[in-house]
Image (cartoon, rainbow, N blue to C red; front, side, top):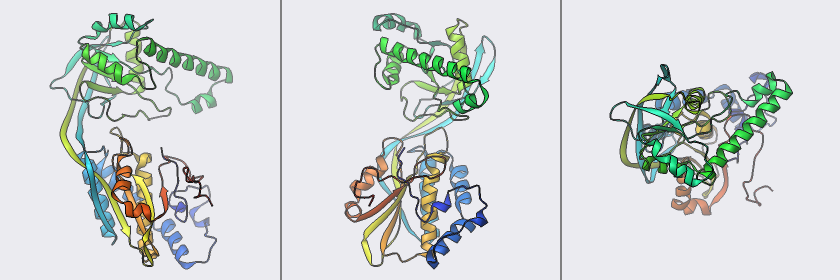
Amino acid sequence: MKRIVFAIAFCGLVVTTSAPITAQTLAVDDPVLKNIWTEAIENSQLERLASELMDGFGTRLTGSRQYQAAHQWAVDTFTGWGIEAENEQYGTWVGWERGITHVDLLEPWVRTLDAMSHAWSPGTKRPVKAEAVIVPTVANAAEFQAWLPEVDGKFVLVSFPEPTGRPDAVWEASATPASFEKMQEERNAARQAFAENYNNAGFEGRRPEGALVAALEEAGAVGILSMNWMGGWGTDRVFSGSTEEILSVQLALEDYTMVYRMAKNGLNPVLEIEAESENMGPQPALNTIAMIPGTEKPDEYVVLMGHFDTVSGAYGACDNTTGSLMMMEALRILKKYYPNPKRTIVVGLWGSEEQGLNGSRAFVEDHPEIMDGLQAGFNQDNGTGRIVRMSDMGFIDAGP
């Protein structure tokens, strides 16, 4: 995540405190700043905006219909406040949308599992029934290649099976120090062994899954099963762009580890998967740009920014709806109480950041005049928690 934080006069928009709101005061007499502070504290629009954006549009995967509609909502919201705004197209991205994902364990007993297809995964024309297997422990690539034909017609589990679904903070609070330490040591050793087995199989590197999936697909596997756990409650995350050729489904932690244990212990689990998806071809990739023109120095710019797209598995409350809405709310309040700034104030809501910072990079290329006149840039993408610092992000002259 990007870590330079917009935390000047508008920090009251998102900071939580143990003191009651009425006890907060602004230690300056400037009437404009007082109006800004009062508006942010007593007339915040953040909750309404969050509901409209997240509940109204859901996930905003780049290229999806929800992504397009949400960018238009942002423009309409800005213009409703009397602020100049437009969507700028800087390219295209493959449009893809998820339908239902239904996964049932059929053997050795029956249960419906918590699952979701990965972004850009193909769907199934009909329910697919197959055994689920794991990659065995191998000494070298030759052993892996000798085993590989066995995946023909099967689902393959490719993620590390987390030994516990409890966050470390819960362990630390509830376990004895000895059991907490033992769990960590055993988990770390298991992770290392899992990664080393991928290396032995010939798939080295920081993220070997891509090459492994390609090999499994070529060998006839009908689907890939994975699990990515971020270390807390309710934080399974569906990463974007896992594959475009083979069915790829993510299971929730408890269900994934259960199926993994079954396969490892010779229980031969059989799953049936039905997954709907729609590939819509190239779709516009957008940035939403809004601005209040400067009066004295219109060719000098202050840019407030956050990325507007999300991954496909959630509507991105903390990555980065909070940052985007903070910038929208900031511009709303500025328009109301500081409508004639000296410099031009720009809000940029970037698209396709999750696929490689594409929106912000495109803005830099498309707007050399703003880059030449840039006086300050404030980016918020720090996820949850209080704003506690600002970073100059390597611009060594920015600190002074």
